[in-house]
Image (cartoon, rainbow, N blue to C red; front, side, top):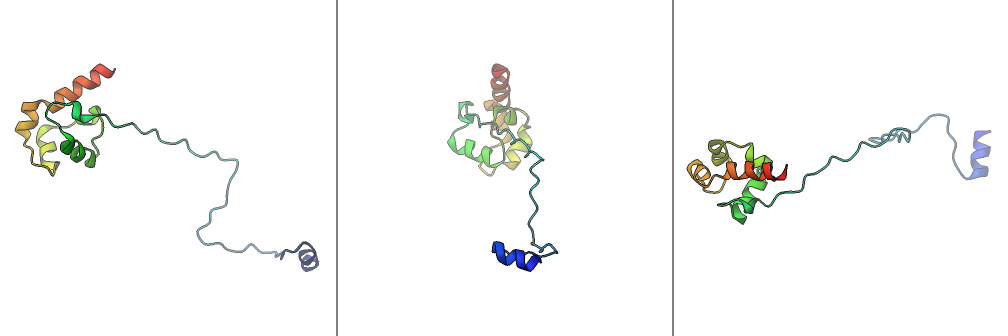
Length: 107
């Protein structure tokens, strides 16, 4: 009978589900998770001593906002930066303090 109906409707009707590798069945009753909010990057070049090259190097490390920079320690940051910058320069130019001031000003 299934064969007859399948021929009639132009479909093949089978009694067992066909395996589909890697396909997860849709569950319309489950809402998709909300998108993760992405913080837009801050213009790190507003920090005295940080130019476009250092901004790009910081962004490559995942430091994209003033808050990200304010959480850093000068020695660890200097060791992670591929560009030639010393911890003394970071301290002298007060990158971290300036970033913290920007965070405080935004609040």
